[in-house]
Amino acid sequence: MGTTNSSPSCPDIWELDNGDFAVVGRDLTSAYTGRLPTDVSVAPDERIVIIPRVTLIAARSDIPHA
Image 1 (cartoon, one colour):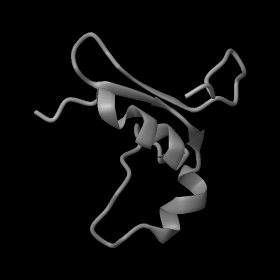
Image 2 (cartoon, helix red, strand yellow; image 1 turned 120 degrees about the vertical axis):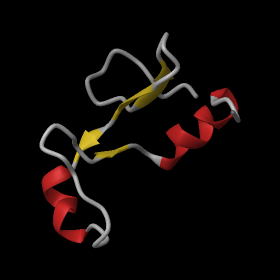
Image 3 (cartoon, one colour; image 1 turned 180 degrees about the vertical axis):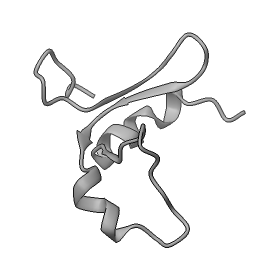
């Protein structure tokens, strides 16, 4: 993508050794908590992380279908 570097403001997504995915993005939990659909909740150990659309679209080809 050319948008990831050592800057502390670079969003990214990558696959971990166990098959899970890690996401680096902006923590906007407090800004979005009151705007969530009624059937969505955020546990105390969770955060709402926003990543730019371009980051997820770029990762799409690397995410397995199954």
